[in-house]
Every structure is written in structure tokens, then in C-alpha cells.
Image 1: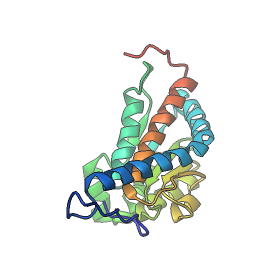
Image 2 (image 1 turned 180 degrees about the horizontal axis):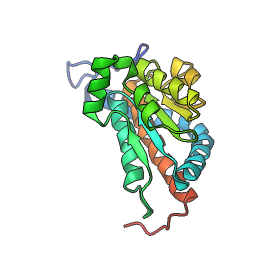
Image 3 (image 1 turned 135 degrees about the horizontal axis):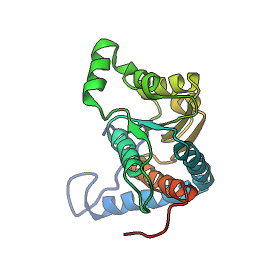
Image 4 (image 1 turned 135 degrees about the vertical axis):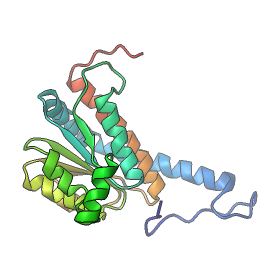
Length: 214
């Protein structure tokens, strides 16, 4: 992962000559994660609103599209897997597609149209008015993710961003956003995973999934 500008410098430790390792550095990372999680609690109402909206969309036969690059691609696929499979409660499968997941399509579009269109062209293919696109980017500056958001809104989809500190271009391109206030890319991604799990929980609740966890 490429660190964001303004990343936190690791505190030196006497237990090892390597910067950014050892007990002190590990404690710093845990403290950064805890601090970011506490700040993130203020965005719980946004997650609740998104989950209820997705429950309506997916429950009525609509579709969720998700996109991101690198670690954010993994987060996007984690989200769609929880929906097509299940999160914690048993329920019918839901329509969710990770736009990076088809390597043949992604590489064909990149080769023929350019990398910036890799997700946008798939939005044109799969998206329908009323569907939702979730865009993940720790920096909020990924050109292919921003392009997908703009195309989605033009086609009548709702575009949401899960990103790092704002303001950034992706937030501006989307209808709504969850922005994680953290300096380290790794911390942003860790909070993104928590956001995805919270979102899946609200979706299940809104669909009336029974609470019989296995």
C-alpha cells in the first residue's frame, strides 16, 4: 500500500533498530485505530440510513455495485460476498457485484479503453436506475473510481463513497460519503472493514433476517 501524504511517523523504539517496528510502534498503531474508531462513531447514523436504503433496494430486486483498487478492491469484494452469501443471519441471497472481480473484463476494458474507464464501463453495463454503487478509496483520488461514481449518477444510480479524510474528489462526485478521519492508509482500511460489517448488519435487520446465528 502507498502511504498517504501526512502519514504518522513511527515513534522510535529501543527494542529494535528498525524504524516503525517493535512494541512502541505496535502500540501507536493500536492507539491510532482506537482513536479513529471513536471518531467514526459519529457516522453511525449515516451507516444506518445507507443500510435501510440498501435493504429496500436489494429486497425489491435492485442491485449493489462496488468498486475499489488494491486493498479497497478487497474491501469491496468482502462487502459483496457478505451480501451474496450471508453476513451473520440467514436470509435470501442479494444481488451484489464487485466490479474488479472479473479479471478478463477489467483487463479488456483497460486495454481497449484505458484504465480510467475500467469501472465506469461496467456501471453502464450492469447499473440500472435505482441501483446503488459503493465506491471505496482511501485517498478519494482514484480516477477510475471517481469516473464510475460520475457515470452512476448520470444513469440514475445512487453513488456513495467510503473513503479517507475529506474533502476529496470522490466525496464531491458522490451523493453521500463516509470519510474516515485517520492519517495512515492501514487505519483507514481497518475502519472501512468495520463500516462494511456495520452496514451488512443494518441491511439484515431491515430485511427482517432472523437472529439465529450459527
